[in-house]
Length: 278
Ligand SMILES: *[C@@H]1O[C@H](CO)[C@@H](O)[C@H](O)[C@H]1NC(C)=O
Ligand SMILES: *[C@@H]1O[C@H](CO)[C@@H](O)[C@H](O)[C@H]1NC(C)=O
Image (cartoon, rainbow, N blue to C red; front, side, top):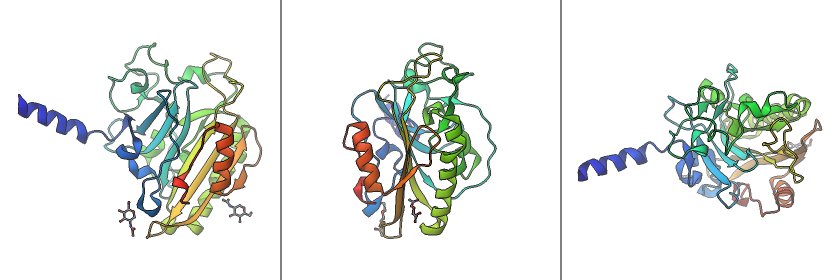
């Protein structure tokens, strides 16, 4: 009996590589920059409304990126990942949800919204579903961009509704996409080994503007992104950020420090990126 319990605990802790977790800087630290050797996730907002996710696909042993999710607004706050170069991937356009947000007893992997084994409700209580976006006039704007992935499992895993927020379609396909492509050029020319830590997020609209179809999902007022590249001694060698309203305007190119100041105002909470070390 005792041995069984010990084994169970052992197995349990060894499979915690993806899912809703208490502390993603411990469970999936690989997605956060480590300037000066310190794991430095962006500010995690307090309260049970915000859930930390190590994003994992079924049949993949490892998680692919991390997300802080806002269950009240049903949009992410941000997704964090390491850019390691890009490779052409197929867009399967199967959208996933995170079952554990609605039922903590569910498994750690994301599930496709349509074939989910979780009945509705509770499915959707704490997250957006496909139906929220249908005929909404908004794109499901990726935070971790498909364009920044380098393998198919990774590309597939970005198609989770927990990595998406309602985005103005011309913006998603226009100026924001251009930024995602410009920044790849910066990584290639300024970062060691073409690697960069990236965090991309949104700011919920203060007037609580929602997608009108079901009136459940907040339409963010702003999209932002920041990156930090480290050298072999864990020192920042290149960093920067972008901020744009959710309309098709060119994102403002800012330093990480200026972005932190703007986000601190917009979120009305002290917001730190990369531990203030990039
Ligand atoms: C860089 O940080 C990593 C992760 O904390 C650490 O393992 C490594 O020893 C550090 N390298 C240097 C040269 O400081
Ligand atoms: C911001 O713009 C300047 C001037 O165009 C450019 O040199 C710099 O690399 C840009 N920085 C970022 C973070 O895009």
